[in-house]
Figure 1 (cartoon, rainbow, N blue to C red):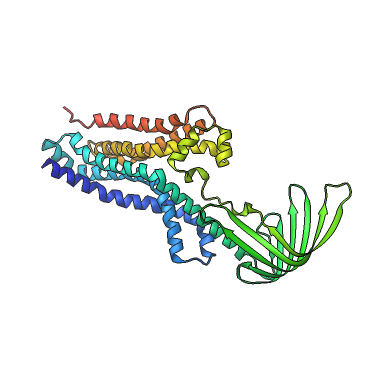
Figure 2 (cartoon, rainbow, N blue to C red):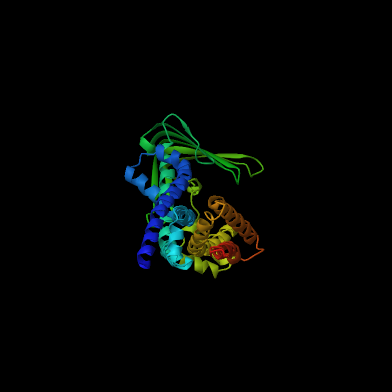
Length: 380
C-alpha cells in the first residue's frame, strides 16, 4: 500500500513538472528569438535549419528552467494534495512526512543526475552548434546586403559599390572599394572592372573567411603618417583582398559555455597567462570559465534543494490560516537569486572564492527548507 501511494505521488508530481518546464523554456526562448528574428526573417533558410537552431537554444535553457520548474511544481502538487485533504489522510493512515517526501526526492535525484550529464558534453556541444549556425546566418546576411547600385557599409572601415552584382554579391562588376584603417589612418581606394566574393567556412572549427578577388583595376593609396601626404597608384590584373573577420563575432554565445566540464576543469588549473594563450581568454572570460564550471555543479544540487524546499512550502502554505505558499516561494527565489548574483559580483572582484558565491545561496535555501520541514509535525 505504501509503495502504491508513493507511485501515486510521483505520478502527480511529474505532469506539473513537465508542463512547467516546457513553459519556462518557452518563456526564455521568446526573449532569445526576439534577438534572432532579424536574422531568421531576412535569410533564405529551410524550416529544418530553423528548427535545429531553436532546438539548440532550447537545450541550453534546460539547466536554467528545470530548478524553477521543480520548485513550483512541488509547491503546486503539495498544495493540491493538502487542499484536497489527501496529505492529511496519508498522515492519518500512518505515513510519515519522510515517506511522503521520498517520491519527490527520487524524481529530483534523477533530474539532478540528468542535468549533471547534460552539462558535461551535450549542452556545450549544443552551444557550439548554435554559434556555428548564427555565424552562418550572420555571414550569409552580410553577403545578402551587397546589392547592385547601392553602397555597402556593413563592414567597419570598408565601403563597397558595384554597378551590377549577382545574388548575395558573389560576382560584381564595376567595383568601387574604399578602405580606411582606423588604427593607422591609412586610406585606399580601389577601382576594378569586376570582382568575386568567396566565402569559406571550416566545418570543424569556428573560423570563417571572406575574400574579395578583384580583376583589372588600380589602387590609389594615401599614407597620412608621413610628413607629406603621399599618393600612389598601382595597376593590377588580379588583386586578392582578405576582408576582416571582426564582422563575424557573434553576440549570442561566449567561449566558456562551449567548453566541456573536463576542459573547464583544466582551465581551473591554469594561470591567466596560460588560459590566454590556450583559449585566448581575457580576464572576464577567465573568471566566467571558473564560474561556469562551478555553476554546472550547482545546477544539479539546486534541483534537489528546491524540491525539498518546495515540499515544505507546499504543505505549510495550506495549514492553519495562512495560505501563502506562492508568496513564500517567490520570496525564496528573490532571496536566492539576489544573494547568488551579489556574491558572484564579489567573486568577480576577487573578494570571495567562486565556490562560496555559487554554493552558499543553495545552503541558505536548504536551511530554510529544514526550518519549514520541522514545522510539518502535528501540533499537540
